[in-house]
Amino acid sequence: MHRTDNDPKNRQAEIEVEKAIGLDPEQIAKAVAYAVDTPKDTDVNEIIIRPIGQSV
Image (cartoon, rainbow, N blue to C red; front, side, top):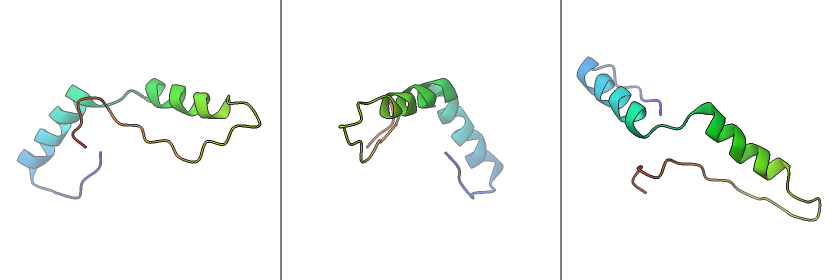
């Protein structure tokens, strides 16, 4: 999650949220590998990856 807010308090709050619900690079890589590993006759049009704890 990237924001342009330069307020240190807001930025610190964002960092804490990222630590609490953020995804690890390995989790993203697994999702991408899933899409790449689908059969040739399968079309993956879109992947939305978000942590379970993130509001929609």
